[in-house]
Every structure is written in structure tokens, then in C-alpha cells.
Length: 174
Image (tube, rainbow, N blue to C red; front, side):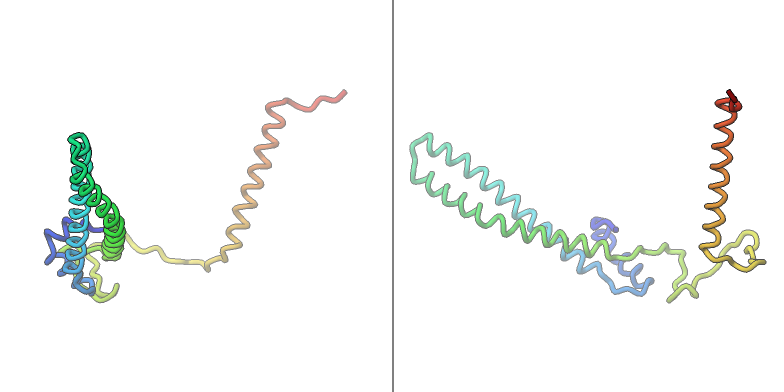
């Protein structure tokens, strides 16, 4: 998954890399989602800060026996408490949408990767050795499994015989 900070700094590079892969440019949509998420986080933090300072002011107003100011501040705190959950839910939805959008972006190719529509557009730059060829007919998968299971059974049988005769000694007759 690409970092949103890198996308904000290199929006044109992302769009060019996605164009190489045949995908639509996404940087503008991603940046707008990120800006929306950032503004929601900022407003939530401002509301939380105001609620905390208003709560402290309520205590100070009660200490000075100023009940009118205390009631006004209590009403403000109650209003903040009712509006904050809706903003938190919107923030969660926006964050989830941003993560979903970021995780759906394909990997961007390096600059030296040739542009092609499919695997036939690939260029072989280097090959080492020769490709191995099949000089026998391929076996069915169940035949290979049966052979390896039988070999394991034989090996286990040999190990058990060895343990029986060499650890305990030969069997004694009475």
C-alpha cells in the first residue's frame, strides 16, 4: 500500500505510473479524501479541546458561585457531546474509504520497466543457463503421493526394527 504522504508529494508521478499500467489517475481523488479526513480530525480535536476547557471553566464558575455562566457552559458541553459522535462516525467512514482506496492501488512500476499491455510486452534482458526439458511423461499427482507415503512407511518400519533390536538387545528365550 502506498503512503498518502508520498502521494501528496508526488501526485504527478503516481498518475504517470498508473498510466503505464493502464489504470486511471487516482491522485486527485485520494488527495481530496485525505483532505476531508484531515479536516474531520482537526474539527474533532478542536471540539474535544473546547469541551475540556469548558469543563474546567464550569468548575471555576461553580467555585465563584456564577451559576448562569456554569449553566451556559454546561449547555455548550452537552451540545458538543451530542455532535461529536456523528463527526467521529463520519471520520471512521472517511478513514475506511481512504484505506480501501489506498489498498486498491496497484504497485507502481520502476522507470526502467518497459511499457506493455500484457506479459507479451515484456523484454528479456538476461537469461542464465538452459531451460530444463521434459524427457519423460508427467505422472499423475496421486501416483507420486502413493510412492512417497510407501517410502515413509518402509523407513519407519526400518527405524522401529533398529530401535527394537539394538536398544533392547536380542530377545531372550526362557
